[in-house]
Length: 293
Ligand SMILES: [Zn+2]
Image 1 (cartoon, rainbow, N blue to C red):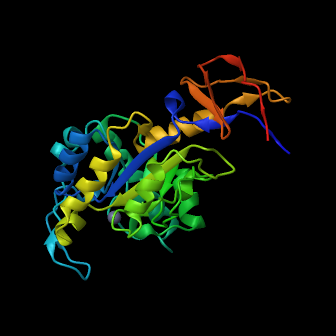
Image 2: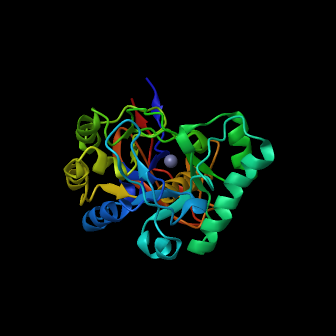
């Protein structure tokens, strides 16, 4: 037997499902992707290289050669409005083994330039080439980066324990994408010791839809997963900020009381109850009765 305290994270409104996307490199194909995302109301974080904005080129990466034109600096803020802009390194260099000062500059100069463009403090990052190690993480911390996405697929919907090693659920081309979508949308209980709430995280590059000539693939996915009352559609930043607010909650030793010191509401519940509790900013609340298992 165990006692289930209803102190687990639920998404805003008491929802049990959240979707976030992440697309890299800031390229012209993002425009078509954005049209699609805006049409269906799905949110995304776009990871940009500020030192490469406006540069034109092509990409093949052992596939069909397609345009790889970086978006113009002047159009960036407006283009990505309603979504999130995050850092991806000033010049998209691999930071592995790089001189420490250069490594910090590659991150910090990118952050500063993108903050000037957006007029907001930016603390999100995606690892260029997916390269992540302890030295790079140290540099990110010193540059004030709070969350950083890898390219390691989990094929799960867990909330990351360490946001500087934020592993996505899968890439959009993953053969399991639609099986995972079905699992995500299902109301069956999600088995996770941390929270019954699911987080589906999909990443990619929009030029890949040109390379694979499969724009219908992402439209099918977005269409299937959008417009649902029970899903929290969020940027990476919104996910990070919400989970951080949850982690700042202060519980009484007997787990009956909870205090929320943050400026946003946090919703709590449990795997075995439909009861939910909203802890408002600055509020101390009595939790719903525990469930005997
Ligand atoms: Zn990249």
